[in-house]
Amino acid sequence: MARATKKRSAGAGKTNKAGRELLKAVREAHHAVTTGDFSGITIRDVEIPDPGEWGPDEVRALRHRLGVSHRVLADLVGVSRALMAHWEYGRRKPARLACRLLDKINEDPEAYMESLIHRKAG
Image 1 (cartoon, one colour):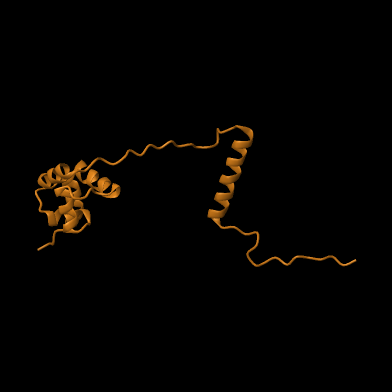
Image 2 (spheres, helix red, strand yellow):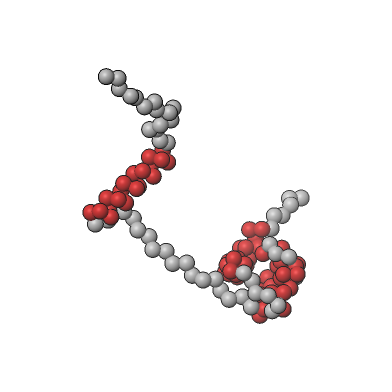
């Protein structure tokens, strides 16, 4: 009686390093869940705070703290001058992502400015 055999494709059964690591992690997680033994698993609980509230007064105060114009602050944040003016005059509120960036700038304005300014030798 003849046996039917399956022909394997060229890469079947082979995994790269990332694939092997992923399979190992899945097996470890399965073991932890089925046995209740989480000793080999690292569990991280991360808390990400909400960004600060940035109204017109806060935006204006940051601009004055930096000693820059609307145009320069807009360039530093990566938004249009019109949008920066809208924030400062209270017509619009910065999006959450913009608030996170404003928080970062406000944390250490001098360091933020230094990270962006490239002086030409000469």
